Length: 355
Image (tube, rainbow, N blue to C red; front, top):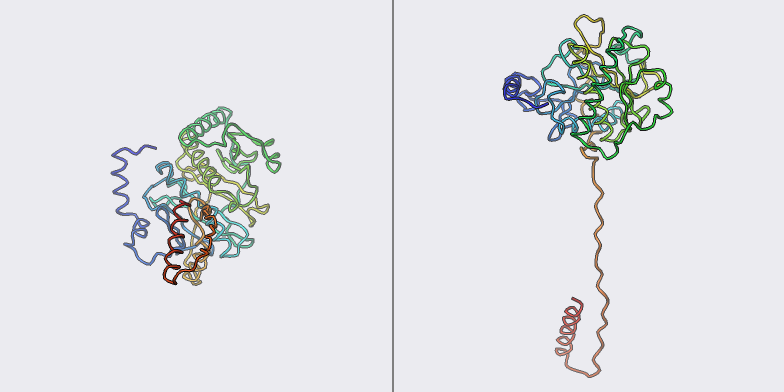
């Protein structure tokens, strides 16, 4: 989205009052940082929903994903696999959620666009993401409109961000066959499948599955992770525009927990309206444990997280090995001083010849 001078001025005013911008700048001190690079910052939440709850943000102020530049978006969401792995490892958890609220109706409380990373396990008492099925249905016209608009958006995305691997729809992996056959397909390419589930939890509820990984987000490459979230963001925009939604929630589930017993990797996208009956808003509480200790445990695991895939393998340099040049001994005897001088001259001459 091209930001007009008016929008930029509005964002500049927002930024002055933004608590997260003040944490980033250091105006509010003692932020509990678990990861930071030139573009992003991750902090342990001081009012966590679960132990190890991390708030993840771009340093640049954006109120919603539609405003985020393509490069910043790619940078942020490329790092989700590495951060997920670090958080799960530090907290010794089996699953993770990535949760985003876009718009007031969806529960967005900050003008700074945030992602919440929530390590999960069975019995963790987080019940927000247990959904009732069969709570909404789109008309045929709405489905066709959504399919058309989302496909156009994805084609435009590939026009702006060409991918060598993209030539069409690609194959459907065996673990998605049943979903493919029983759901209404909205869009697919070689790496993702977007469907309207057979028993949607709300009108306009979309699901995006990875075609390259069945369960664990931490196993995705940075490119595949960015593509998954690009698609989720564009699906969110399609629901805003197509259904005149007042907000959207994006929720990634990965690995085993009470609301994802099979551990499937999937992204849920919900259009939101005021008083629509969905209760996804996170209600954190003041921690009863040592947050500094949790922060250190996670930070100790994030040192390997790096945009671009970590350390690049150094190219081995070919070392030229000079040929051994035999210097013949002089038969005639000379003084020690002459021998040394003669040998040095011969070495110099040999080196010059080698060059």
